[in-house]
Image (cartoon, rainbow, N blue to C red):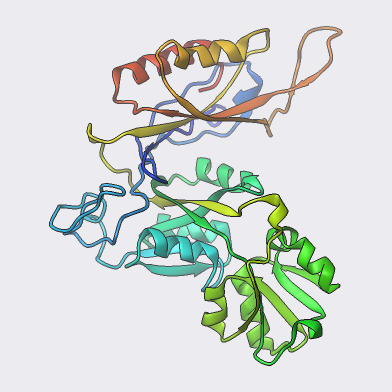
Length: 356
């Protein structure tokens, strides 16, 4: 692969209540464009098994939300009846709860870093990996989104779960005795109203459930953790307060993606969603031209967001003109690349974008 070429990260996700699968497109880059300094990325396809899958037994169907006994399962045929699912955190982490929600029969495998999560699957220590990608309070988790683009795994499932933060402590500890509260930095920020009222010192750790583990392991009688109720059960802690996130910010729901080494095959029965990444040339109406590719074919765009390119963030706009950021766009649309109109749309988009 040309290390100077930019590769598109394309996914298609089967659409259900919370899950969407797919298959990969190719990519291209135009010499001389700022985005050409982005690292090469492999072609790959992403497909979802989604919420509603009651397990990975070969006798069960992989149709999302429509699973039933007695049908063959394309999703489960590659793994043992109890797949190992790598996640970031300690037992009782919200990622492990998402894995159980999506695949009740799975064996969650705790990993201390995001790199270990994806490497666990790539190196065959685990069958699947699960990672958070979006949160209703915090938005897209960009570090993980970048990790998905470069890790070489395929999305084969998706699930949304509510994040219910609880204040946990050793049995016998009173809320007024708590001097320090441990949790992930995001969880601490999401529970700022509670923490201000308590007047406690905040201590950030890499995972919410790990905070509960520390409280138990070190016997901290003057400290508490913000984590799930399942983490309290896992480490023998007491729930001092439940559902303690800042309610004025709205519901706290997190979206997770299930990753595997291989994509799943396309079937014409399901509805799909495809995710693409592209950049635009400098000039008026470039985004309009890109979006018209979908509008002309009555294709439904479900998400679009942009971020400055990291490798070459500044875009020259001409002599005397102010310097602007050079953006990369992430877009989701309903459809599968095996469909004729989607193939036509992708060819059209390739013609008008320097990186796709």
